[in-house]
Amino acid sequence: MSNTDLEIVVDDPTAPDDASPSVVSRRTIEILVSLLLLGLAALLAYDNWQTGIEWDATGPQPGYFPFYLSVILGGASLYGLIAASLSRDAKSETFVTRAQLRRVMLVFVPTAAFCLATQFLGIYVASFVLVSCFMRFVGKIAWWKSLVTAIVFTGLMFVTFDVAFDVIMPKGPLERALGR
Image (tube, rainbow, N blue to C red; front, side, top):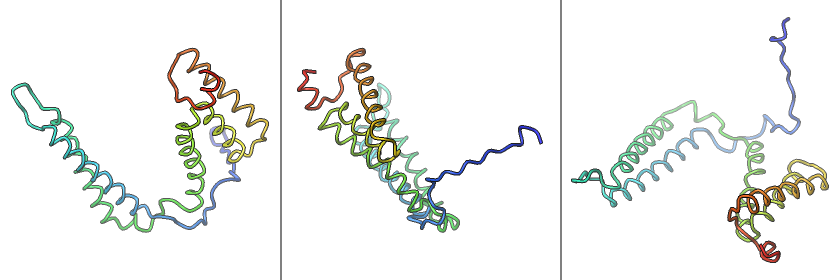
């Protein structure tokens, strides 16, 4: 057996259970996404139609090209909607299981909370909280390692953006108290 025939298999002990119940089918998600895109296409087409989609003496009006792009998006969405509605395979096919959705939410919820917290705490404090809590609760890493990593990361981020490049970042009460 040559070295190219070797295969290394590593089991992930935290992998979602294969027997986890389905939350939603692929067909449902495809129909939902097609409807959302169709609605977006209609909104964009209407907005660009109001802006102007004619061709006048100076050339196309501002909404000309975006209007036709939204028509193409609407056509593609209709095609997707019809194809998903007629598909028999996608009806029984699982899009996401409960265990998989839980893992996705384990990342999505803290990230959404970080975005909200940034508005009130500032980017640096919110980043510190996100990194330290994410490492501790999701990664199961020791508190001291999580805190040290969060301090180093936040410090490097501050030096890079605030000091070196002088980028305006969302500030919170801590930065204002320190005079930054």
